[in-house]
Image (cartoon, rainbow, N blue to C red):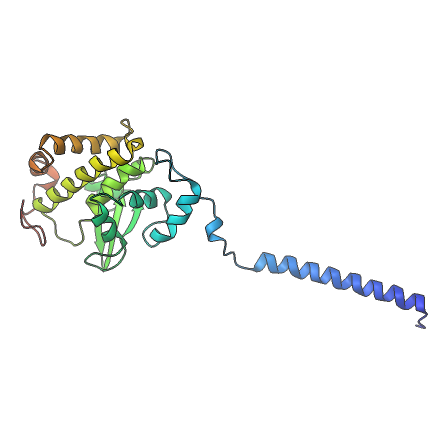
Length: 240
C-alpha cells in the first residue's frame, strides 16, 4: 500500500485505538485475577445485645487479635469483654497462655455429634492431640456476648483430659464471678429471656447467696448427676 500523509494519520489513529483496547482488556483481566487483600474492609455483622462501644469499625479492629481463636464476631467481642474482669486470666489462656501453649479454638458445634450425652450441654472444653477447643452449643449463637464471655471464662480453665469436682467448682465460681462483673460493666448483657442468661443469673444468685464465695456453687456441682463419676481432685485443682 502506498502511504500518503492522510493514510499514515488514519493508520496511526487505528493503532492507538487498538492499543487502548488491549490496555483496557488487560486491566479488566488483572482486576479479575488479582487476589483480594481487603480483609479489613469485609463487612462484619455486629450481633445484638452488645455494648455500644462495639461498633462495626471497632469490631473490625479487634477481630485480628482473636483470628486464631475464632472468626465469629460474637466470640471476638465476648473475649474482648473479659478484659478488666476476673476473666482476664481465661482470656489470656484462650489466646495461648495455657498448658498447650497454643490458642484455644472456639466454635459453635452440635455437641450431640461428639457424644449423645453432651447434646444438651451449654459448652464443652475438649482436647484433641495438642490442640484445645471450646465447643459451644449452637442454641447460644444469639446469646448476648456478655453471657458468652462468662461461659468462656469457665471453659478456658479445662486445659487437659483430667477433670474433678474441685476443678468444676472453681470453673463455675469463676463463671459466676465474671458474670457478676459483666453485669456491672455491661448491663445490656442481661437479656433475661435467653437460656444462657438464665444460666448465668442462676449462678450469680448462688454466688451472691454464698457471700461471693463458692459455698452454694460447690453444693450444686456435687449434686450434679453429670459429675457423679468425677474424682474429687485433678492436677492443679487440689482444694475445694
